[in-house]
Length: 324
Image (cartoon, rainbow, N blue to C red; front, top):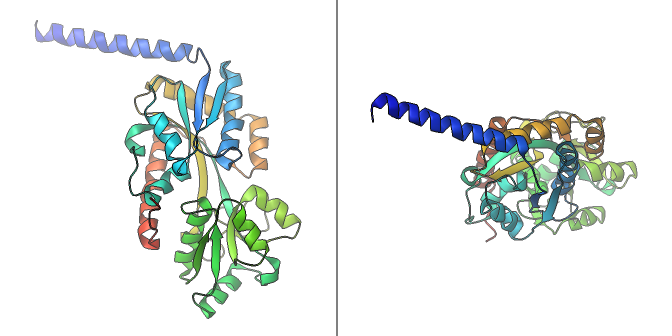
């Protein structure tokens, strides 16, 4: 076979593959899509995923069924998607927790960057640095001053090792250069301990913080993102308080097995962007304090890679010890 003919055959084969992939994406999905949530029902990422994908399902005329597969700090659910057929019918709700997993586990049965393809970003929400009214802190400066006046005596709570509240707390501890103890709890127990006066401060997700602030049960000192939260416009950002290195956002998105056809990834990405522009979706996300962040698959992939790199750096600086 001449080289010219060989090239022609190769080009024809590539064109056929491309055409087949495009045709597959055009018809996709032809049946319900399973979306694995490695988080507990009612978790922030779980709720956001349901809001966005319910709209995506309406747009595409197929249901996106979310199944919670918890265990191992999210590892069980992620691993099940990594092993799934890369046909677009098994997807993953991904979040900041996937980044923190690399510093809370000695080893993982997958490589998130290699074994998963970023499909689309949903959005992000801040945590709010809150204290109990009885503590008397009115600003971040008050809290830092108290911590520095008596090193080692103050503490902060979290929803567990590697949780968003833990990561936000460690970022703040390092940025403020304060000597405080971390006390991990299970989920909402930390908030109860804060209001009971047994822990000094806590980073709570924005949505539940709003009601507690309104009721006077907690005092908000700062939000953890670079811009003020619409739901708490009077509360300064952690950067405005003098600690830009403490900025932290909790994000959520959609991923797929690594070899999922690019045409399907692109179609899902476009549909998620369309859903995020839907007024009803925006209204529901706003109630949770979530800011939509549409990204291309490439942008999402880079965002995730940068987040993991930052998490590894934080893990070393904060001396976070793996839990398994």
